[in-house]
Amino acid sequence: MNKLFDWVRLQLKRSFDRIRNEKLKKNILQAIPFWIASVLTGLFAVLYTRLFILAEDVTTTAFKWHPSSLFVITPICFVFAWWLVQRFSPYARGSGIPQVMAAIQISSPKTTGIADKLLGFRIILVKVCSSLVMAVGGGAIGREGPTIQISTSIYKITYQLLPKWWPKIAKRNMMVTGAAAGLAAAFNTPLGGIVFAIEELTKTHFSYYKTAIFSSVIIAGLSAEALLGPYLYLGYPKLDGLSPAIFFGVALVAIISGLCGSGMSKIILFIFAWKARFKFNWHHVVFVVGCALIMASLAFFVNPEVLGSGKGIMQHTLFTADKYVHWYTPILRIGGSMVSFTTGAAGGIFAPALGAGASIGSLVSSWFHVSDIDTNMLILSGMVGFLTGVTRSPFTSVILVLEMTDRHNVIFHLILAGMIASLVSVLVDKHSLYDHLKVQYIKDLNTPEETELTEQVGDVVVE
Image (tube, rainbow, N blue to C red):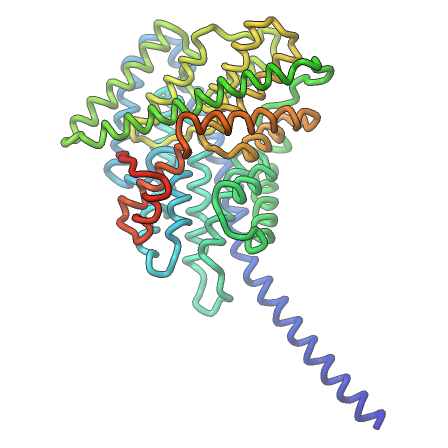
């Protein structure tokens, strides 16, 4: 009897071991595509970053060599960047984040062909080329949004290349994870990537995504660090010994920057609606040339601060003794972003939004002549507030700025800025710029989700 009991126990143990091993093997096979795509994302993000910096350096060199050269370079680059998108991949235009949101929203077996228009190899190629040309022309654009669309495309391509016998993976999981990894690699902010996925990209329970997102964000970030080395997007601004009254300044900056961010988004949507009435391509060409001449004129006659992503303003105000910007700098940064983003070429709005917010924080500081340390706090608050006004993702904005600067002692200050900016932004529009653009992309693609989403966000017409 004991021998029979031992034999039964042994057989049960072997059965459980086999089940456990099969499950482990399946889990590993399911994880491998995420790991491969993560490495590719990290490597691609590094290459794209270096090319983008080089492109911006070309603009700086040209302006120093002969400022009036922008009147030739900028129109040519803007038109060429727009033409690349218009001719080869219309859904590669703009930031890329609304396209990713739309692709995730409509992800289903019935919409595979439709989603391919938003993510894929052609998107990657056109996105990179168009945004780099815009950067050479001095466009006030960023690389972070495009990196997210590129990363999500890499994950989607990896998913499509899996053989039929491979353990089943949800395509939506791949895309959400790809977007998170892209943001993490672009800013070197792993927590920001995770929070972005939770707050912005998915409404489902996080447990479905957590393992894939955690591992992918870590691998993508480590791959980027392997080539760039450990770095912060901005650096270590001084924030020790803040004034007890700084919370009032943070609240004021959050109100102003939140209203400006949402207001800029509203104007961008209005311009897109106006452009949708254009009947011929030459109308668009005239508009793009006009935008380019505005950028060149502002740089030549007012200040070259209007050019580029705005990272220079963030670094200059945070890490030099020259803390205060000109009164018109926020206007330049906001105007430059609107002019560049509405051309229809590829280019992100994340970094320009942070730059505009930094200039607002610096300007408000100059009104009250606060200390350098308090000024740094207000600059960071402006960055959080303006980005929140555009995206309506306050926690993502807070975590991004915290990880960019590694100054976690001011987390409560930045959370206050994000929450206030989120509240006041509703006064301008209930929904974010990304939400409106996502709805329009889905409507353009004629998907079944069109009616439901239009009711949720409103009927907004953009190009």
